[in-house]
Amino acid sequence: MTFQDLTLITKVKAALAQAEDVSALDIDVDVKNGIVSLEGDVSKKAHDRAIEIVKGIQDVKSVEDCLNITSFE
Image (cartoon, rainbow, N blue to C red; front, side, top):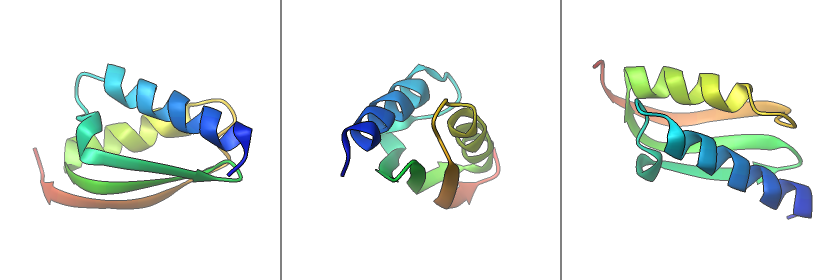
């Protein structure tokens, strides 16, 4: 894992932690060459918001959505 990937993991985790409608503890974040992978169990609302947040972070090339939607709240 490169220094840039480690930095991006920190940025993504911080952004998710600051979001009121996303539980960052429910989402595992991995990064490889700027591609962010998200895994975990979340609501539909939290899923959509997390994807939106991560796509808006500088240096994110793409998002691999491996999130499992557990409810539609």
